Image (cartoon, rainbow over all chains, first blue to last red; front, side, top):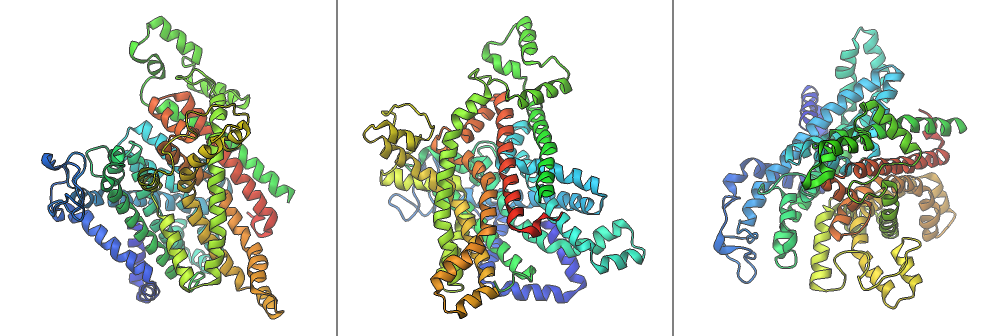
Length: 301
Length: 335
């Protein structure tokens, strides 16, 4: 998302009208604005979490294990959302955990999008046989259900958050390749590309300067969508014990640790999942808004 | 048309070889020596090690191993599980009906609720129903289903005690399973309460697995309906005085179904990925749980064979959807 967005920002910088137009449409979508504000809070917590959190995320309050949230009998204001089986403060762990999910999203989207865009451009500009080989390889990756492939990749690389991110990036990459290639193929036919070629632009310039900026809209939407997919998949891997390892306060890992307490302490299970859901929902709302604002065909529908 | 089908079929071959190569090389890349894993805690003597290596072909060069694996696969031999010592093929087909049963019910659940939801939203575009349904769909679409499963367990199994937490049927029932579908077999067994037990075990996993496809289908149906409702022939039908139920239900929905059917077909991969989580949480004895268990047990032949079978299944379904789509919509056949 990072580089796609910065490329977008650069593009817009040259033509200020576009950003204004984009914002005009984006602003009209109330859901997208709500999503954006939640995402802003999420990003803030990801950066400043440890300073905002009321307690240390790993500190164990031995005298207060499995304490319920404040509004339930037995809850106290010092642990607003209660404590987990080891007496750690839920709220603090959730706040500090934001940075893992945020980092997963940023890392996965950056790697998957950069790689996917470059491979997609190469496929779109290459002779047919190179194109065929690249697309067959992508078909092969896409034939495996993404979570299963990520699971096996992590089993090979060893369970950790970094490896989970690498695995998810590999699994999500083919979507960018397909998307970029499809837009490149349709853009290449257009007159402005021919005229750039006639004017003497090299293949490299055609790829990155002439064609790429005009293919970015669907890629940006895809970036938003895969940001949320990355968070969900990383949490799922953590839940299966193949992602971040305890005592990391990653939301999926927290859920896995809390599983045996589900019938005794609802809060240890409910809040981490709620955090995942709200974050993913906010990003998807933003993604819908981006799509409506960037894709004129879908506008007003 | 025939060319299109043949062309699509031809691309299947390199993809199949690639998928085989990937599942083969993944397993070679896993840390740990498979024979040591198989021997377990006790370890093996050097002679026995060499014997086992020869038996499983690990002493051959890697390309010979791949060739043997590929030819074995084409003859239906996917190797034997290290843990159970049964052929991977047999294990897969013993467990597959459980996954198929769950997936079918999840699919029915999502279509039965998703199609009407999408149609109602489209017809009431911009009004309360549309907003409410589409917000719900977006929540479903963003749902971490492993958490959703835990929540449902807390409410329906914990607080209300309505549904069991794991398995396909209560342990007190035992009967032959000719079809492998618990719903059918329990009914056929004639044992009192068996069918009800099977149904109660199926409810929560079905909801969990069906949630994301449900949201996707509802969203896709809505946007396809909106597109179709703007067409001239709908206006003509309206002008002729046709009832709106007939227009929406028959004329519009039928044409809106084309992209929806594609989405349904393509969600097979999503279902299998979802089955991994759903089956693990509900201890549902299907291939998703089997794969996860095998990965943790380092049962290499099972992971390898399971990956391959699942990928081939997804490929066949995608190919069928692609070809059907090509038959329905001639615009797709180009390139």
